[in-house]
Image 1 (cartoon, rainbow, N blue to C red):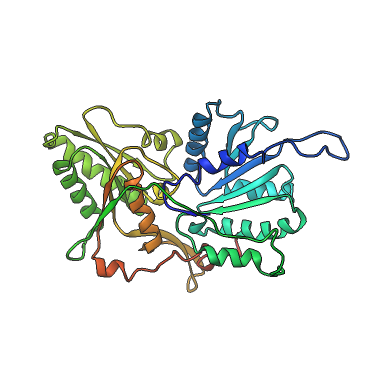
Image 2: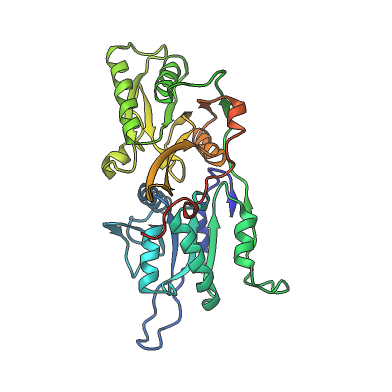
Length: 367
């Protein structure tokens, strides 16, 4: 399933599957005679995406979170084994469930979301699911992403199958998105300090642009905190913008407490412009309402294996073009927006098209 950012892959597709009857009760078990519910499960790469998407789908279906729509993340779960029909969880939880139930007998549909990130866990899951599908003909698998090499994944699941066999073979379905136009701006000259450049760009947006929240992408926790402190120092001495707005700054990264992460999803009060300074945790699956400006530093922190020291280390490297498109798409979810990339356009075109899969850049012996 390939669709633009904002086309409803994560929120609408599970509801369509539920309405189509894919979560109806299965056959009674031979040993106990108990009829178990079949669930539609959706995997997400990050915890904040799981909780926010589950809350959004439960709100759209007008049900209590934890009843027919639930979620499960590490150290926290809110679902019912009897009544839950749509279940969101992280990729690690699915691998853990595979260890206890190798054929995933509780699920009728498995949807893998945001596959383009190519984490080690999602690649392991796809390999295991290919084996499970040979044993369970009734299991449906959906793989979705906004920017993914769909032909590559389709050929992986069709490899070894008879070409004349139409049923059970993987196909590609494209969905048209309702993304608004996003104007992309580049620098005329290289930026020597991208953290300082993000701060200066955000201040110019706040002073000159009409109301609309700002999302700033940086690489790690230290840079996010440094940027937040610099912006708060500016707000302590600056006057209101020409539109009479004050700046409300909030950080967002993986190590932040869940309550503080959710703070970034709340709307800004009247007379305030929200500025969310985030790592790539806000790149996919999370819709921050009101964002119309994205400031992209064009760098990302990735785990890479150093074959000289034999250690995994976090390295700041250039973002891929696919990830940069995802970041720009954050500005066009609810209204037309703008994206400011802190690099020259000719340098951006030389960036890699896709992020290197985690299996190819990390040490697997410790996994």
